[in-house]
Every structure is written in structure tokens, then in C-alpha cells.
Length: 193
Image 1 (cartoon, rainbow, N blue to C red):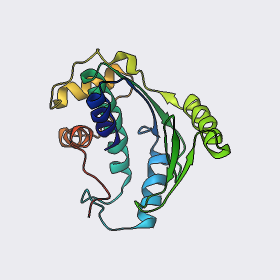
Image 2 (image 1 turned 30 degrees about the vertical axis):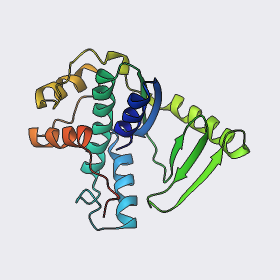
Image 3 (image 1 turned 135 degrees about the horizontal axis):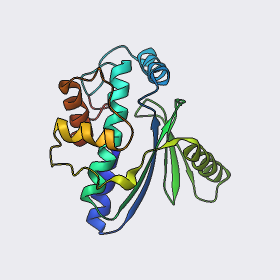
């Protein structure tokens, strides 16, 4: 949900944008299961997407974020994006800009904000930079390796993930890959009623 909104705003202002995204490593089943367990602990009901959190959903969401990074990079030349894959999960989400950091949890109505030059902002900046550097980097510089269609095909997506040394699990059927594609280019808001 976030990447398309940020790209749309940058495109409207005709300005470059730099994004650094750190997500759960989709190849690490333990961290994916830990995240799914955490989310199910908060609610075992489907969210705004109509899905409940499972290990497979967590993996697909992570793969979809990587796919979205490549898809948007191919379409918006002023996008500088980096993706790091983490082997640990956090219960926080940090959105940091040059003006503020917003820290949220898995509730759309709970957030904390700190502005530039505050102790908390500077601490989050350091924390996020350090964490991103420790994450396994996705080779976004290979964004031209596999051109992606407006609606990427299963073959394109499988080929892309092979080319970036992040192959999709052998257990993923074509239907699973279609799910990843939908999550990447037509994401649903999980907080929608």
C-alpha cells in the first residue's frame, strides 16, 4: 500500500524519491511463522484484505513487496529504492522522512510522532540505518534484468525472482504467484473496514 502512494505523490510533484524498505525475509520460515503468530494473536479474524495471517500469507506479502519495488522502479525513473530482508521481526512499523518519524503498531489508531532534531528522531534514524545495513540486500540494481508487464505474468515473476537470487519456493503454484502479483500491483488496505 505504501510504495504506490509515495510514488504517486512524488510523480505529482515531479520530484525524485528515495525509499529504504526493510521487511521480513520471505525465505526464513521461522520469522514468517513468528510474524503470522503475532498477527493472529492480535486477531484471528480476516483483516481488510479478507485474509487471516498465516505463514504462507506472510511469505507472499514479503515477496509482493519485493516485486512491487521492482515494478515501481521500472516505471518511475526518479525512484531510488532499496529493500532489505530481515531475519527478525518487529512489532513496530517506522515511517521516517526528512521531517519526522512515525511509529505505529498493528492498529490504525495508535501512533507516535517525533520531529527532526529531537532525541527520538535521531535515535530512530540511527536504529533504522543500522538495521537496514544488517539486512540481506535485494539487488534492486538488477531492475532491468526482467522487464515486467503492466500486469506481470507468472513467467516474468518467476524469472525475476530467479535472476535476483531470491527464488520463489518450489511449493508455490501458479495460483500462489498470481496472489503475489495481486498483492504487489493491486494491494488491498488491510485496515479497511
